[in-house]
Length: 402
Image 1 (cartoon, one colour):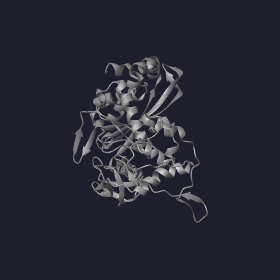
Image 2: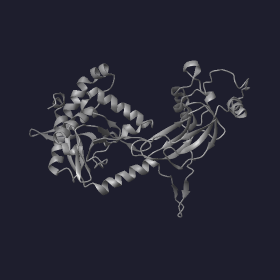
Image 3: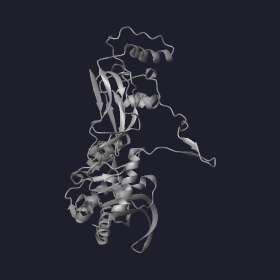
Image 4: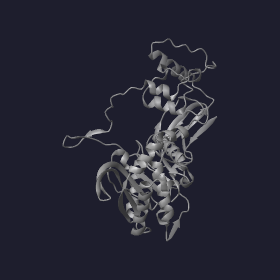
């Protein structure tokens, strides 16, 4: 029986994807739920696994091809196994190690740690050109897990790029095709600048009180909640307080209408190897400090592992980006449409400031609010930023919802 490999649902407002990489070739034996290929959408990378056990019969769409939902990528001959392929796949790794391969019968029931690797582990092994037979599995029945693979990985010299070329003047350059995610990021940022009347206002925060409060309760907080107390939870809470006071910053334009949102789904920008993504904290106003820290950590891990679902990325009402983690002192962030505002956090530096007529050294952070001037007046933008500043400089206000 032939089983089609089809493009799955790609998420809200996404209808196309690009075939990023096949992990199997025609004629290979595949297991149920084994990783076959990756699709890259404008927001996330999706793994497509085998819906049946058998042999990969045909590959209809190749790397770089653009595909749409429901389109057939290839076929699997369910239940059919090319005996020569099975023997070769089992014997070749052993032969490479100088070990005599013994393949008794094709129907022998035996736990094979190689064939039972989860898709994420298969991907890691394939991408690093590792021989799974050489990896000692520590899982149940000798199964290989991700930690086993990471333990044998060693830094290797970066291979010369296949796209390396030389300019007419003899200067070396490298030309790489933009990923779908990178192209989408570029297009959305440009669309944001072309559509919104973006203006940025600035302020600065004395971080001394929130730093001291964090130091005082950090160990007890981590012991009780199992997560570190960072500064992002304070800023999420401060932003929500300000959004409640200035609802226009939490609104969006829809044609000739303004939609005021009475809920607070806060996007937190995360940098990944593929580009910047903004996963969303749902109903962040109802979260505790610990819940905010846990959810940010969870979403950041999913983002860096390329495991974000479309539902993690859509529907945010306001965004926070923190260039300070990379050392940025000041920036003008670009709005994430259709939102109307984004706040940029920056590096904290000790600077001399005037306090009650005296010069003191304080840990200071610049903050920036980029906003759509079509919907948010300058007075509201400045007031919003001042409210965030006051909440962080007086963090007890957050605890008492002041």
